[in-house]
Length: 119
Image: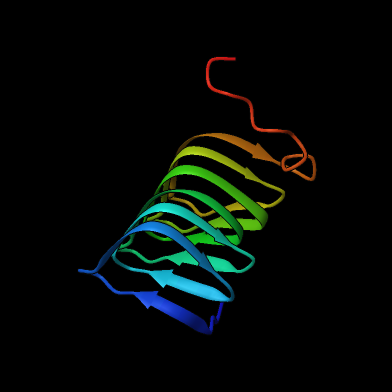
């Protein structure tokens, strides 16, 4: 899939905080915090994202730790890892990928309200 990235966080770089973006963002470094976008987040093979994510699309070739809500689609490549929770209407997982998460997939996945921990 060809992407025109509007922003890029290279390996060796890190960002901590709240990040909002449009279009596509590629992360090959370390990103921590809250992320929201109407676009696509691509986590490269050296990328580590520890965050609460609310995005349209997510492509994972590195590591994502946290709560993910993708409005359109999530793709996890052969070296990709997701830990936490995942809600999306469409999920593609390639052989070799690792997912250790509470996963909700389907058209109704995004309709369910988030439940507080411990309920």
